Every structure is written in structure tokens, then in C-alpha cells.
Length: 418
Ligand code: EPZ
Image (cartoon, rainbow, N blue to C red; front, side, top):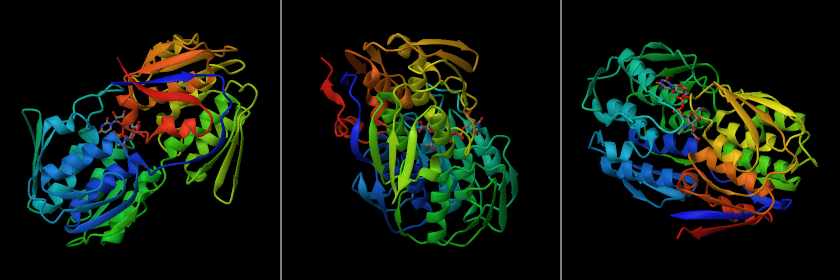
């Protein structure tokens, strides 16, 4: 397995370009099941989760060419309706094939994803929504067995503004008979990107990006070409990298408007952020101010930026309170941050971070995707050397992050773990 070696203390400078969004690309890849034929998806990041999604699509009968930048997905012969446990357990987003298979073939057998490091992450709202569209849903031997002659439009109100649930039901309803209304729908930009490709395929979806989405079912969808939106969490991670090192960087190919909540909090912490001709400049302060955050569904502060922001608060001037309101176990980076000399205490879903003047480099271990990013950020700011093991977590969601950070002047390299 690989590990990262970081010699901290360098102020980041220069320019970096953001890759396509993992959390947009995964549902977009899966949506091609609804449009038999050759779909071309562009601006695709090179990630482990993209490779896993390709394996899932191929196991269903798709023919896929490429695994990054431009990926061609021919779903003409998607005739297998079973997504097996060995694939779904490596990437829970695979459960999103349920709705499209049901809509296209009238049946699907998909493994339940099981929990993950950051929480139980049930899919009860996905299943409740599909049942509301008329699907017969059974749980047997760890699999969801779903059947429906033809899905029928319905009014669905989500107890929680679930991103995956919204995506699942938007895709299933696209071919249902009649109108579906999703209330308390998730409003993330990735939902808008998915609705864009579905509408270009011939779907009739209105309101994506708001909490009420209307889908008028159509008979069939046709294959298209689509450019994936930029990865707002990768962009946010680079913004925090500039902030924590007191650096001054420019970020290309990002949409600043996708990160309002993060931008306001970084500016409160003393970070200068300007946007000129679609190039975002981020200038870190000598020392960040301590700021409180609460993670919320979009447009609130993104849970996927909580670990990275916590790393910044570890060196802030003062104490900050960070509450995680989306997932029940998303503080696993705390015990590793403590190894850098951070001062953090946890009470339920709230962490209190007392900023220290300097972190000291240490050997640490990645536990999940965004925790890995948080450890890199701490390593960039710490003195001496930091070694981060188990970075396969990182490779799920960041495309060559060590190369991009090295391009900004960081002393970071990937080595084989002996
Ligand atoms: C998506 O996960 C993202 N993943 C996550 O990013 C992100 O953290 C999350 O949305 C929230 O923004 C992808 O898009 C591939 P949810 P998802 O359904 O869809 C509960 C990353 O780091 N819930 O919005 O699984 C659930 O347990 C990843 O890139 C139910 O109870 O998130 C959680 O507490 C991590 N029942 C909350 O809702 C359900 O049926 C939000 O989950 C569905 C969800």
C-alpha cells in the first residue's frame, strides 16, 4: 500500500486546476442505464470510485471505454439487473442502479450497501420512494429485490433531504407514467448536474436545485454527451490548503458559487478570497481566527468539508466549535489530528478545537476519504515530517492530489509502504 510523506511549513503558491466532480460523475454514469446507446461523459476525474462505477456498469452489460477525462459508456446491452455485494460494498453509491434498472427493465436485484466508516447510511428513504412509485420491494439475504411493471408517478416527501435518495428517485421517475413530485429534495449542485444530463436525454425535470423537484415521466431517453461539473469539495480542500499554510494560490475550473457557506466561514477566519475571470485567488492569513461551524444540507456548510476545516481550526487563534449534523460518526480524523499536537475534545456530535500555535509532524493513518484530506492539510502546516498511511481512502475521491499540491510548492510525495 502507498503512503504520503510531507515536509510541512511551506507556504503554497501558484496555480492549480480542479478536476471533475466525483459526486456528480457517479450518478451521471449510472443515469446512462436509462438511455440505451453510446453516451460520452467528459471532464471525468481519475478516481478509484470511478473505476468501481465502471465495473458495476460492465457487470450489468455496459461496454465502457476510458476511465477518466473522456469516458464512453454504451448501455445498449444492459440486460443484467443484478448488482452484487462485492461491488456494492466497495462503493455504496452503486445502490443508485436500483432506480434506473427498475425503470428500464421492471426489476432489479441490488445488494444492500451495508454501513461505512462515517455512519450506518441506510437507504430506507430510497426504498420508500421507489415503493411510492409502485415498486414491489423485498429485502432478502442482504439484497433488495424490486419489481414493477411500469412505475407510476407519485408525490414523495423525504424525511431527510437525502442526496442519494433524490438522485435515485429523479432517475426512476424519469420513465414513470405521469408526474412525480419530490418534496424536501436535496439541493446540492450535483443534483442539478444530474438533472441537466437527464433533461438532455429527453427527461422532463424541473426544480432541480430547489427543495421541490417535478418530474413528468416520458417513454424513453436517448444517449448524449455531457461535461461533468467541477469538484467543489476538491476546490474547497485547496482553498483550505492555502489558508492553513498562509499561502497565496489561484484555482482554475471551479465554481465559487457552489461553496458560499465555506467561503463565508473562511473569510470570517481571515482568508482573502477573490474571483476574477473565473480564477479564484485564495490568500491565507498569518494565523486564522477561530470560527464555529455546523454542517447542514446544501446550501449549508458541507459535511464533506468538515474534516478539512477542522484541520484549519487546529492552528487558529482561539477556540472553535464544530458540530457534525449529517453523519453520526464523522470525527475519526480527530484522534489522528491529536497526534499532531492538536487540542480537540468531543462531546456527542460536537468537537471543540482550541487552536495551537504550531502542529508537529507525525506518522498518522487515514480512516476515510475526507479524513485523509484533513491529515494532509495538517501535515502541510506542521513542522517536521508527516507520514500518512492507508491513503487508498484518499484515492477514492481525489485525482492526483499530491501532484497538484507539489505543483503549489508543497514538499509531498507518494511512496510504497514497505
Ligand atoms: C452523498 O452521500 C455524498 N456521496 C456524500 O459524500 C455526502 O457527504 C452526502 O451526500 C451528504 O452531502 C455521493 O454523492 C456519492 P445522504 P449520500 O443520502 O447520498 C441519511 C464524500 O465524502 N439517510 O444525503 O449517501 C444518511 O444516513 C461522500 O464524497 C437515511 O437515513 O448522503 C445521512 O445521515 C461522503 N436514509 C443523511 O441522511 C436514506 O435512505 C444524508 O445522507 C438516505 C440517507
